Amino acid sequence: MKRLVVLAGLAALAELPAERVATYQPYWALRAHLLSRLLRAEEAEEAYARAIGLCSDDAMRKFLIAAALVLVSASAEAQTVDVGAIFRARVSVALSRGCLPRPAACRCDWPCPAALWPP
Image (cartoon, rainbow, N blue to C red; front, top):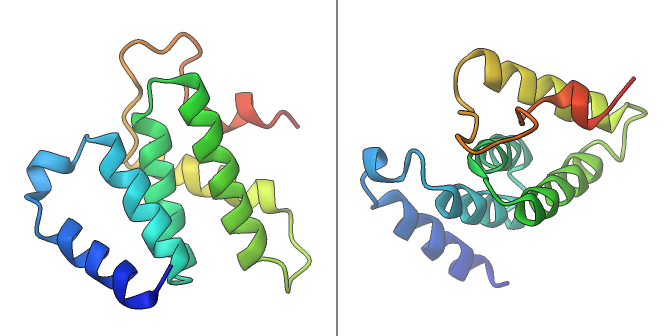
């Protein structure tokens, strides 16, 4: 994807009223994707975590988790780190701050990093 197209997409997202998109999962999924295309890994990870937390569809949640793990893995590739631990920690922090609401229809109380990645 061309850089200018990605920047235009982010600019269009920025124009949307924050209160209208705060709990709109597709907004966060698209924002995460666009940020990852610009190699803004930390911001993209936060957006993926938010999108995952807002997701009520299991297939979409798995897709977003996979995309987030690929991003975390790519950003940590030059280092010897536990990629899963990084993502779990960031989701846990977001949960503790109340940034990731739990879906109302959730049967597994997702997002729960411990349940997703057992020790």
